Every structure is written in C-alpha cells, then in structure tokens.
Length: 247
Image 1: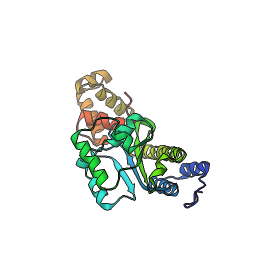
Image 2: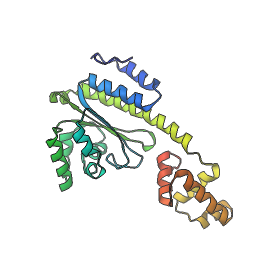
Image 3: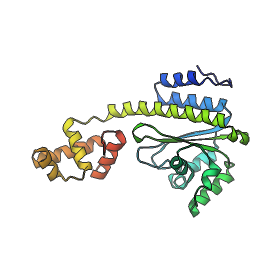
Image 4: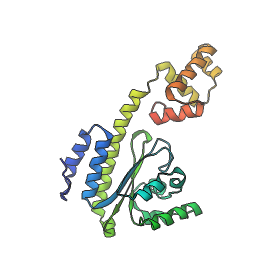
C-alpha cells in the first residue's frame, strides 16, 4: 500500500490500490497523497459531466492547497467559465504547462482578466493534465509545485499523469455503475428515447412502434420523469450523459 512520505513511488502497488478502492472520496484522498509525496503543493480535479466543458457550471470540483480566497472566487461559475486553460489542454490532449496553454491561442478580454487574477493570487506556474474516461466522461486535473523547477521533471509529471488517468478511469467505472442503478429504462422506453433523439414526434413514435398516440405520449412522459428532464433536447442530452443513448 502507498505510504505518504516515501519518495520511491511503487506504481504497480498504487495501481492495485486504485483498483481495490470502491468509492470516489477514497480514490481522491489517495491521489492527493501521491501528488503531495511527489512534491505537489496544490491539486485540483474537475470531474466534468458528459458533453460539457471543464469549466462548466455543473462540474464537480475537488481542490486542495489553494487559498480560501482563490477557491471562493473560482467556485463562482461566472468567473470560472473564463478560465481558458482547461479547455485548451483538453483540446491538446496532453499534459501542458499553464503558461504554455495561455500563449497557445489568442485570449479574449475576459480570459486575459482571468489570467491576471491567477497572477495576483500567486498561481502563475502549474501544469494541467487531460483525463479521458469511458463514454465521454472526461476530467481535468491541475497541480502546482512549491519548487517551480519541478515542472521540468518529465518523469515526475509522467508519473502523476499516468496515476491520475488510472484514478479517473476507476472513478468513471464507479459512477457508471451508480448511474445504471439510478436510471433504468425498459426496452420500450429505450426505443422511445432513441426515437426522441432522432427527432421523431410523439405521433411519429406511435407510428414507428405501432402503438396508439396516447400510449406514445405516456411513454414520452415516463422517459422524461425517469431522466428528470422537461423537454426532448434535455432528455437526449441526459441519456447521452448516462450512456443509455448511442448516436
């Protein structure tokens, strides 16, 4: 088992520990310990709803080591949405220094203001890691180091990236199992959501499935209720997020 404070990181043992853990908080605590042992003084993890941005209002954010002042600011969705770094790094698909991401493309005025706030809070130097999970459940993780030169330690960064990726995939598998237990559609309801996503009206659904119009209406309402949505677009997106729907 991984023991904090030991710098001889045993990757195979940590991978086994990640696979053994059965809940998300324990995995995140393990990752925090690993990163701390590797010299990171700050750590964040953006678990992103499927089909959403890494700075979306609906992200699940876990952060350690950042000042309360910064977290209070960053947790405001209207501020966080102007953070250009996560989406740039996700698009690049590889670990990337924050400063490299900032100069990768031209920033708009609001993004430039965000970067100025980073500097003002002493968060100029860090690294972002894109994390790709099954069925489009992606995430983004970021780290800073007390000694900035550690950002140039490619072996250390590669180790953090590999273990973070393994932890994220394990988290995805746990959440996938939870989602499947939470939302269950019958065979007929699954057919209905597929037709909804294909743009079919209730009348067309009734014709396609050879059922009455009132019955089709009932199935559509039932699908909306199970997915906790109120419209056809919302139903399609939610079904995609849960892995129920395939396009």
